[in-house]
Image 1 (cartoon, rainbow, N blue to C red):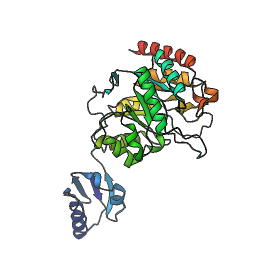
Image 2 (cartoon, rainbow, N blue to C red; image 1 turned 90 degrees about the horizontal axis):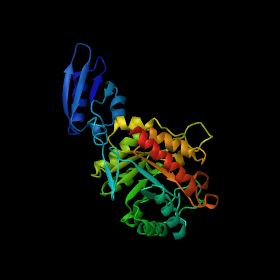
Image 3 (cartoon, helix red, strand yellow; image 1 turned 120 degrees about the vertical axis):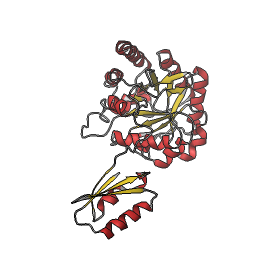
Image 4 (cartoon, rainbow, N blue to C red; image 1 turned 60 degrees about the vertical axis):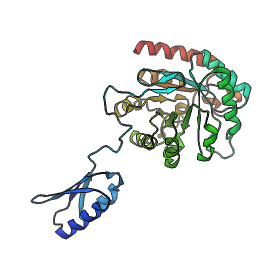
Length: 333
């Protein structure tokens, strides 16, 4: 980090600032020119509040030289992380299709959907047991019972499962879950991120409703800084001024994240668009854009779904979509 001081600072002011910086275990190199004094800060500058330093009366500007994203950033152009989920690989050229209902509703429902999407080429089963809803009166999921039913579906099909964790206190219920999803609303729940960072299982991290790519990667950094390098990034649309779709799917995030990071990138067109009619096109486009996986909501009876039926494909619609996705994969390879 470099701090450029304003003209006219006194030696005593410089000494006080240097002493303060050194108190944070930093080495400070002072370079005095004819008009300006520049401080070079060496060490763990992540503990420095850049805005606080800039607000000081004698400081003109502050610039970070090192990248605050240390583990999630792309260091080697040709190196991509490959996440292993059971016998399935994701990232680094490996692609996975993830499908299942927004919410687990019953044993018959989840097993029927699991068998249908598996037959159509899905390799990972998604399903919500704990559901974050805008309204407190909406269906919140079956909770622990939903986890039990997901494990029954895994037993019946052999498919690894992914489901969302909302609260640290529920973590013991996720011991047999293959991939833990951190939803958009919890992308910056740093205590939760640090907790799953202490696990040794894949984490799918969804982009926040109005978060930048930098903020998404910093959230991934929270997980990885605790020792868990098995992070999958998920673009699920961001909130804009356009009301026609549920969110605005930022497909440019796929190649952009691949430029910035070595982590796999999955796209969720169901939550991004909120419309059955738009999901297939966006899923195909995400595949063509180089996504490492696509996650789609599928329900055996969308009209009577307890959650997000308007953005859930039928098994027949999913089967048609999966055929298109695999043709696109063949074409771009």
